[in-house]
Image (cartoon, rainbow, N blue to C red; front, side, top):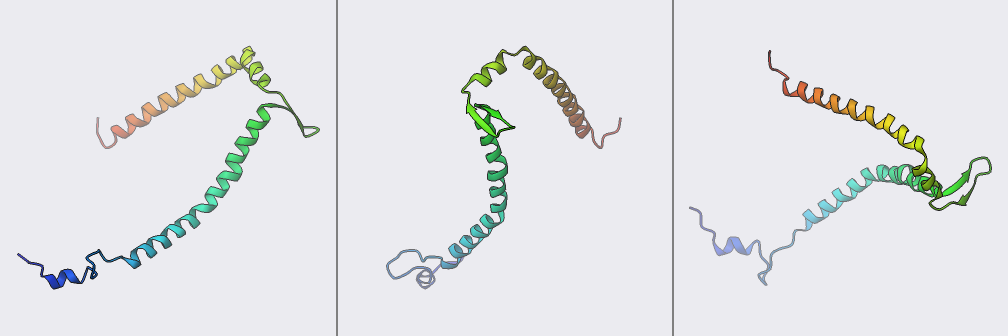
Length: 123
């Protein structure tokens, strides 16, 4: 069994019995963090400009009467949404879209999971 002497402990501690600071580790971690942020920054900028910007602009347009020919928008408030919920064609089109998609994804997932579960088995 190895016993630590007082001389081995004095190398890791300063004179006032506080743990010694690691200078290289924090600097190295900071460099890694900066490099990581630099690598991910094009994706973040692209997301903010092309995805979030487009979503916010479409939200703005949904609360206005936008005229594409004159490129002008007048405020409409919730009138566009009240027309949407009162239109009977909207429910029909949502049903025609969502029902086949749910059936396709439901059966597709079932057969995919069944294929993965029985992969490598015979019979």
